[in-house]
Amino acid sequence: MCLSSSTISSPYSPMPSTTSSTTTSPSTPKDNRLETNSEEDLSTDDMIVAKNSMPEDDPNGNTLHDAREIRWGPQHAGAKLLASQYTREKRIQEIISIILCIILMIYNFYFICRYFDVRNWYLIIPSALLGILTADLASGIVHWGADTWGSVDMPFIGRNFLRPFREHHIDPTSITRHDFIETNGDNFAVTVPYLLYMAYKFTYWNDINIRCIYNFEVYMFLLAIFVSMTNQFHKWSHTYFGLPSYIVFLQNYHIILPRKHHRLHHVVPHDTYFCITTGWLNRPLEMIKFWPWLESFVENYTGAKPRSDDFAWAQKTEKVHCY
Image 1 (cartoon, one colour):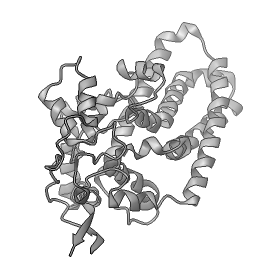
Image 2 (cartoon, one colour):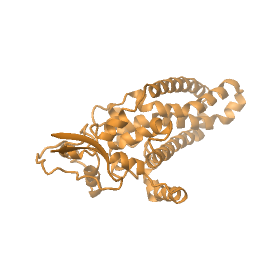
Image 3 (tube, rainbow, N blue to C red):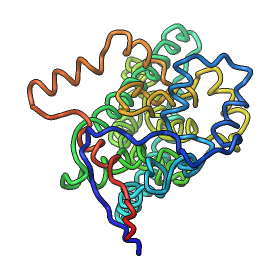
């Protein structure tokens, strides 16, 4: 007789072994993935990442594990519970946010083009690049904050905004099964207030004042675009099959977040490489130990332990007891 029960063990208990003693097949999804990368020089770090993060070419991620030691994937007990908390009200909010954002993007883009002056290219290009870098930094700070602090049980914020981050760590490929609305709704919502203010300025300010602030608005417009698309770039970094060639090109040349680059974040305890728009700032921030310093600062002043809620959800398992 077998009974299934959901339990939460200590958030600091060790993770189960990444290999199953009962699995002896020489050909596995992970093996195949490594073979397809045979042309690349796989360093020791690459092998550690491959061993300790979910195989992206395996939608479940548990082919090498005993059923009683599910570490990640859609069959993980915590992942199933978190996925079930996506509500109809949340869906409506996401739809409204995307519609408003797209309308405002088109409206403001018209004025960006209208006031464009090629003679100012030496100011416009840096403004645009700075907007992209700011979006990357913002994605890292938001990602770090949502990954590291807070609880799904928090009123409003927990279920609506922290829940997807907890689900993503124990079922990384869930994002590839989300449609455009669920993937991008929150990011589009963030940009709406400023895009609305930008539209107001383009509509009611005179030409002289608009030309004075034009470079700043180019900066903010590129920032808004890349903030809006951050989770789509993130989704593509987890999509190992069927991507258009131009997306793969952008990833290979690190114009948007590359797949191999982002795998580093998905090694437990998920405490590094938080920037997910382009990932350009990840290495510089690691070099100055930005995130550990920030975590120490917060912990010293609040007493909160980083990633305690994240660890608790990761350790939620369905254990089978046989009698």
